[in-house]
Image 1 (tube, rainbow, N blue to C red):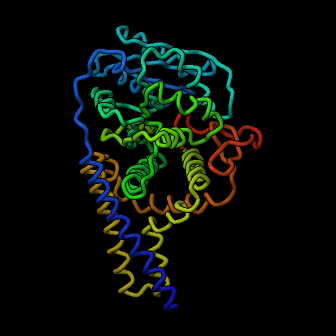
Image 2: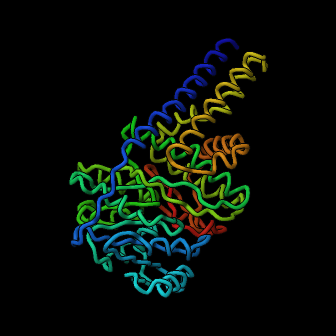
Length: 397
């Protein structure tokens, strides 16, 4: 029992160190801000935003409109859906009527050539992009008017090949969405900072992926990602493999969550977790040290819930909470952590439950379909009939 207490105590200590490192890495990210420069009117600085659609998202029309109000001299927005009857296309048409001066193109229809329908959609949209600098953005994102200037600023460095953005939950309604917002702000984004600055991982997120057409062509185009579940991660990996920089912008995008059921939220987050495990099994297994609260409770149980062990639990979890509050208040400006702070322990226990569950099976549910995911996160086969559809969103793990 003493040996177990020592082992668990060491794990708990490592967990505390991890949360301290999240603060250190968040500080590095905050200091990395690139001052946006006035864009010059030329073909290289003009931007095409690609918005792949599938269904509707909460507050979709208002979110689309934020991309039409950018403080940027020349840009185009391309909305597209493989299904001509997709309801998201009607929202796009309404936005086009709302903003008659905006350069908007709507692409309807297209045959999928791979299992990743979002990537197939983007491939059909690409020929309609007028400009060389592309910005890919999921349909449930909302931005401020300086978004494009902030993202494009990084390309002043000719070595930059891709720019991506962290994100935060916006307007969660109900317990399930609130827990997701807490998981994003207090768990996922801090882990991204650590992976980026300490382990050299260069991820990309569907919130924003900016790159040049030529760079996309050099990695084989969207066709090279047609069967990849984590297409955003693989895209960044391929660009990094070319010897180009993958930059985590200092801009944070709002991910509009709205209301959803617990089952839908669980299904989507479990898909993300399984994908992460299959893509990077070693680091993912080691992520158990990030779950401070479960570790602390097991440690205290091994010590018969003695007063000194309960004191360790309180101290360790206080450090975890302080790190989350500081990062979201001083760096990412995510209001959800302080607003829903009493629910943070529940969010942490939910995150641990998802981590444990992700080790069982390699079948995932994605947009109402079941797939089997092979090693490396590749979609290899349809594993069955359609399941109940998750929230209509283009977000990928």
